[in-house]
Image (tube, rainbow, N blue to C red; front, side, top):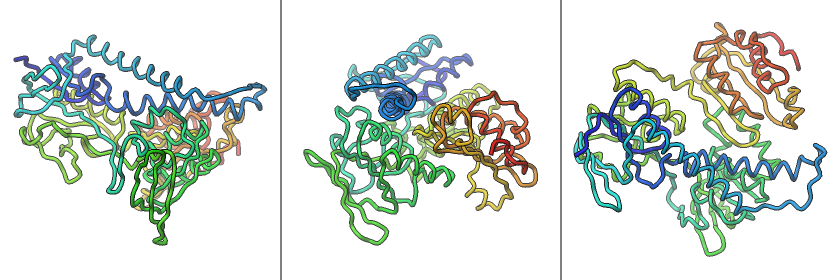
Amino acid sequence: MSKFDVVVIGSGPGGYVAAIRCAQLGMKTAIIEKYNTLGGTCLNVGCIPSKALLDSSEHYHNATHTFKEHGIDVKGLSVNIKQMIQRKSEVVAQTSGGIDFLMKKNKITVYKGLGSFVNKNTIQITSDKGTETIETSKTIIATGSKPSAFPGMEIDKKRVITSTEALNLSEVPKNLIVIGGGVIGLELGSVYARLGAKVQVVEFAGGIIPTMDKALGKELQKALTKLGFEFFFNHKVLSAKASAKEAVVVAENSKGEKVEFKGDYCLISVGRKPYTEGLGLDKAGVKVDDRGRIDVNNHLETNVAGIYAIGDVVKGAMLAHKAEEEGVYVAEVIAGQKPHIDYNLIPGVVYTWPEVAAVGQTEEQLKESKTPYKVGSFPFKASGRARASMDAEFGFVKVLAHAETDEVLGVHMIGPRVADMIAEAVVAMEFRASAEDISRICHAHPTFTESLKEAALDATGKRALHI
């Protein structure tokens, strides 16, 4: 029987990164993956393929809507959805191959099959080839999450679909119903709206991206409405059913009236839930909470010494980069180091266009906690770089700083390339920068990031220079 210092169950961003860091720190490491390819949801049916389709659809949208203004005349444009999906699949295959390379480079043993606990230190791997048992000193559970659904939502994976099926459609929907106004639904809705689909978003709450600063949701709604989205807020979905040729959604509006929506596809995007099926947690004595998440302490260790859990199976935001940070953290804890994670400084991003990005506290959270704060903002319509790229119609940067100390408490952005821009705010907040600190950093001109400098300047109480 093979013996390891650490066994990681799950090869998503949290799992494979944890395995790499453990190996780098001198531990004999193995990783177990249920599916044929490494990378988990993010790489195979999440972050990476969705961004590939977002980029492809954005190219098509720009060719049909903005090229002429740039002086580029194009005729006979059409969508080759088969080629678009094929390119997406190639990107996924290349990235998955990169993970395979990293496992070999770091001498990590890879097992393909379902990993489950026999007891605390023994794990059984079940695959088409049979079963195999290995022993481990420490275990890291990184099995991720899967799409959620509510009662009445009958997912047939043909007409009523999840994000997984939405990444592999053989046609552009004429009418796509999206249940849920969160990140996944808006991103995939954007893909097909750009390609010509009518997109209707049915949302229980009163706005989109409800966990982010409300100002971001309002601005994004304006941009997506122009793209062709329709929004139906304060609607409780009662049922979502498929027939051979269409999907039918029945919801109840704020007046208690039943409303029916019909489309050729319905995307269920009401969140995700921890995936721990088949792990045999009971055999190891590992406890879960009432939401199916694995209970962990501040060191991400479960109630069973030596068994850790990270990523979507534990509390906190379900984000790939959060899982990565936790993977490195646990590896270093096992090695006897003293790492740290500041969960307040894990950024969130929505890859629509305009992009949305945020870190730290929202204005609503600061009000609720009665923290004295001041606000600085700067619109992208005043950005020379945004005008040059035809991205000035929507968006802004908002900086929230403590009213007394000037320390930056939150940064919220919507606009071009803010998914990349937010890292500057994270760095500044990691070092507890003040709004004045950011306002005095020299930014290259013309760049999108000048907007952060201007918003920070506005937050200091001085006026921004270019508005």
